[in-house]
Image: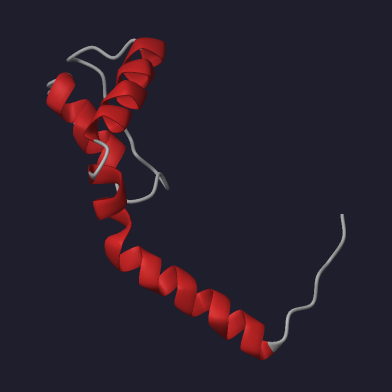
Length: 78
């Protein structure tokens, strides 16, 4: 694996880029509710989620997928 050294200016540009995206991240995904639903249906199917299960969304981003899963499977202890 090769290590890349970035200048402070480049690092600042990258930081600004992702900071700008963060403000609108969920909006980009909500623009495609069919895409989110398709993914979450597959997740529910693979995990075989049932009402008595617990779902932990740890480090999964903004939680947009977990919220959609909860709309489909009314977990008693989300």
